[in-house]
Length: 114
Image 1 (cartoon, rainbow, N blue to C red):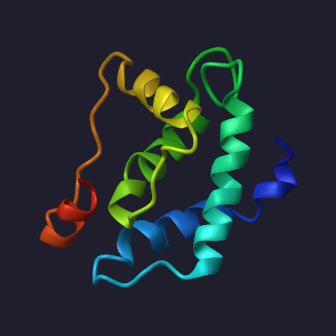
Image 2 (image 1 turned 90 degrees about the vertical axis):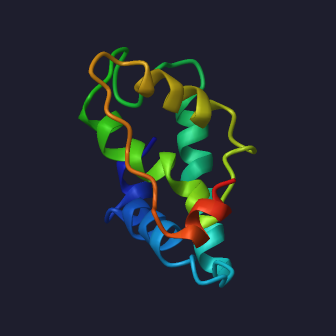
């Protein structure tokens, strides 16, 4: 994955919008969906044939991207088209002393994540 493809921290901007900005029953703007798809496609390809993002073992990169990816369903974005992402999430969640991210307590987001 080329470093400049994800700069300057664009994933965080779009994940944050998808997770926190959509609970009022508003559809995600097309540009957010498009950019999220581009990011997930990059991550999906990058994870082909490897267990973690930056090395053969978990690193800060996995921790940094995990929470945004794990909560994306609350932003009404599915990981179904990206099978390597849920598998990677499961590997991160299986790490010793793993602490799950907190899910939203807002009923709208809880329902969206189902």
